[in-house]
Image (cartoon, rainbow, N blue to C red; front, top):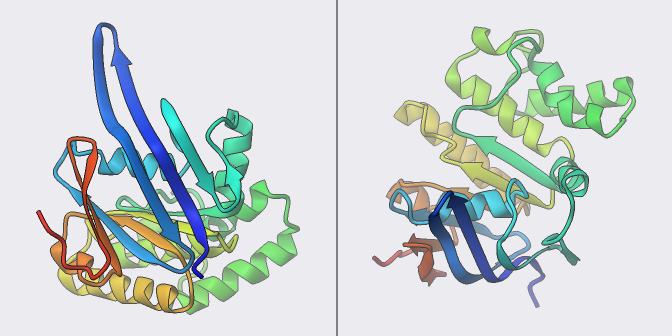
Length: 233
């Protein structure tokens, strides 16, 4: 039986600005199994990015529950959520979110620094991942000295360094040319084949067909949750 590692139940997210109240998620239920590769799709304002922020413990539910692994993270405070993000989650962003003053190895090491991992051990882990990402000749380069594809490879290595239970990707090829984007997607395919659990927000149908499941959002609701990758509208 598959192990459920992500479970949203009755998940509601509302944003209030003065007298204006916007409901971005309308009581959705969603579960993700260990080792699954799922993509979230939908038009702008459909709720897909809000859902990713909730899954990444970057935002809190207004109502409902969120379990990550066996832990209910719905009511954790900011410090506890920060610890969850640093130890159990890996993030890959469209804009890479690298620290410009740090080189490749140092950027990969950042999550380990916050966990108090000894510098020598962190360096070994970071170098191993950098080489796996094809960055062995770029270890001392800073982000501005790298191509977009190389920067995204650094970001992927950083997301892996703490062996996360869940990897979250937000339009990871959005800033890349077609060839480089395909290379990054192939790398993500490899990680999935090794057993990584991946949830990705995308607007790209081609990416959707690489995943095991497509979750379609519309107006804060899930309108399709298709296991064979043939998303309906």
